[in-house]
Image (cartoon, rainbow, N blue to C red; front, side):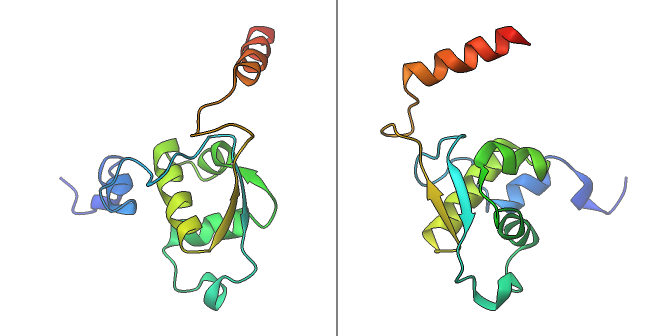
Length: 117
């Protein structure tokens, strides 16, 4: 058995989110995220995952894109982006629906797109 626990896919996400599996507030996967121009110290004192999100979101990215591009579980991305939004590190633009529940037209468009694949 190796002494390197960082390679375990189960330990790392748990450690990254401080053991939380849910964001503090509902964050839609299609919500757009941009880095705040006021990131202290250029993000040098942030955890590596948060620094990566700040670099990535200089251009608008959705929460789903962040998860995919950084190869992290969607739940982890939601927790990290939610924490970063609360700290003012990123700005989140939720889609035009309430409480993180997508409207039916969005779901229908996604379904049509999936069927087209």
